[in-house]
Image (tube, rainbow, N blue to C red; front, side, top):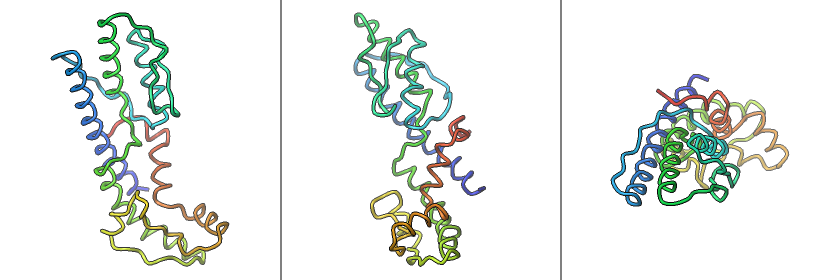
Length: 202
């Protein structure tokens, strides 16, 4: 799906911008804590999903001499309770190691307004050109498609356009969603695919 491939590249760029903003905040926190330290620049190893992030960063931190970092919340948070450190020097070193490992593994599944705006035009086109025709071809009623702007405003919110809203029977709705998947389902599957998490966008 060529349009989806283009979207994923554009989306990855937006995610990396968000990642850079996060690193800037973390660097500011470290400098507020430890003074005007020089932090090394790190190359991105790969983009990861939220559940992959914790294990990847924990393994990375262990390579800097701090084994024992665990994960919590399905891999989305780090647990440092098993790490043994002694004194300010080691506390500083683990903070720097954590920063370096954060830098190496951007979270591809992150969402902010910039990422949402990148996704919305593709989602609108997919809904108009693929999803609604698929539902109609299978004999399902479909609601009127909102304008591009209205669709985009609702994308990934509680007010998102529901292409299956006119399908009353829950079983029919489920079958329709399998046969004619929603744009968010298609997008999430592509983002979380092994191929999608191997490398960052150029």
